[in-house]
Image (cartoon, rainbow, N blue to C red):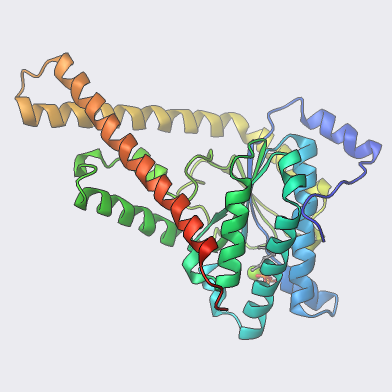
Length: 326
Ligand code: FPP
Ligand code: MG
């Protein structure tokens, strides 16, 4: 089963796409692909067949997103909690992931042609070394592709992601690369696995569950949440159209709320700079002093982030050179 599939659209599907494209189209879609096992039970098949169908559905959805003009997809493929499932299921899912990453690497040229960049969000150290290595290779091989983005959340939970960002910040302070005062919402966000991505505009969860299960908790504060009863392997392009239409109906209130938060956040950073300067220079602090402080802070923060991102790339490079143990 390949990653890039071509599908023939019916005239009705093209007509629906044309109508939807008159309105705002989400740029980033996040999906919790839930219901694979219930689907397998319903079809009297084994659990892993359900997950394989789930993977096929993901590739179909990427194709639908391409036709709709959605250029970023983040899919919850395996949470840290999922390690608690039976050994048989965890091993089966890991084998499936290894097989698909190997296939992905074979299709490198096709991915480059379509400009697909693959990112893996999660704690790679928790994965078996075979998958860790394949995932790191896939990230490095596609990292300069910039037309569309597929983020696979693997060995991921939001809490672990935020904790990891906090540790990076703490390390930065300890190494005197940044000061505690430099820590802001924006800086923490730029330390998350998702840095460089816009927040999801639309988040879909299938199978009737109506919770986020520790997925993109930070990033989805202003996302449109769409819950549907359909099991993931049974999700169709028409369900996606329904989700996009739902997003369009709520677009204005969501965009308004998002705009307000961005401006509040910028204001908070300015206030923090002024407060810091008052502490250093007293109440008669001048605008030039504040500007100079803000310039220094930005430079510190940028240097810290450049080091952090470089370390992450080196981390993937080291994984690729690791000896495969399991
Ligand atoms: C949730 O359904 C699904 C998962 C935990 C796994 C999803 C994984 C894939 C679709 C394959 C990913 C592939 C790659 C290459 C990483 P569930 O098992 O919770 O089903 P249930 O809710 O019916 O029990
Ligand atoms: Mg489930």
